[in-house]
Image (cartoon, rainbow, N blue to C red; front, top):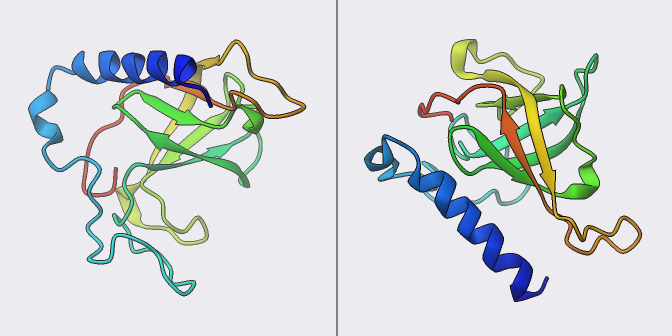
Length: 143
């Protein structure tokens, strides 16, 4: 990726984040509760280890097709080659989709998407998309 693309995206992310009314609540945002901070040796992540991780699902499907990263309470970032569409589902707070963890998960729909205007499907240049959720996520130990 070249700098001319990355700089505007970073500015957009900072603008979205700065607009958050509860900015001071982000003191520990982006820090895993895992002591290692990563998964090693095929070990399963524990609930809350990576609270910014999101799962993308198509309508009428329980199967995930891509992952995304929560960058504010209503915006995610992912790869444009994921072919995200308005109305697809987003799951936050899940580390194992085969198990139920009570009320730790939050479910959303994709409200709006913005791909980079120079995204090239053939070569995956500028392979980035911003996703707006249909409502704000609630920050917890799992999201």
